[in-house]
Image (cartoon, rainbow, N blue to C red; front, side, top):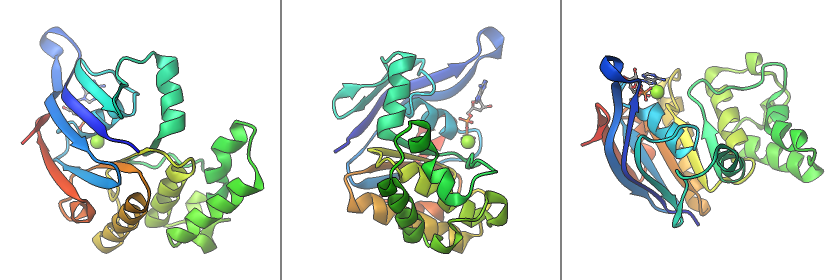
Length: 222
Ligand SMILES: Nc1ncnc2c1ncn2[C@@H]1O[C@H](COP(=O)(O)OP(=O)(O)O)[C@@H](O)[C@H]1O
Ligand SMILES: [Mg+2]
């Protein structure tokens, strides 16, 4: 169960004459079991917004509330625990570990935590299967296409059943048909569980798979 509420969030970088306003009074919410797409051109503040929701960046002002809990007030340590336990992030450039296979990339976090079990492995293989890359489980990232790498990154973010899934430019380097397919699969996964998904993209076609679409222009929701 996760209702994500973003209220009056502003973010400025720098100070004095060099100040950049990346977000200005952004307000929206995402209901449990749904996917919201935020559509905006490059430089409109999309990555800044995802980083704030992930607790990686502090907003200059405003509130992020998840299930009634304000998360913008947390310490760095609390924010790190919150990310580990509740958030799945798919970065624009995937951040896969190049010398680990697809399935090992999914198993990295439980292994680092010293609690990888056979159940984790089965879950990892099941997720790769669900996203249509089961037969690629033992391949390294450099042996995979851009679309396959992206599916690995999505599957990895889903490994710990995050309450909130954050996806940055899901289709940056993909052809459209593949891209919309991946978004549709993710949407199905999200709706089938009590997961909440926030996706940001510059590509209007990717937003078709979402339950709701907002537009971001120059840091403002319009
Ligand atoms: N660390 C930073 N320092 C200064 N300006 C930044 C920083 N990160 C982003 N910006 C600026 O904030 C604005 C929004 O950037 P970003 O959130 O990356 O947008 P998008 O993801 O939509 O391309 C841009 O004008 C960008 O140059
Ligand atoms: Mg970006």
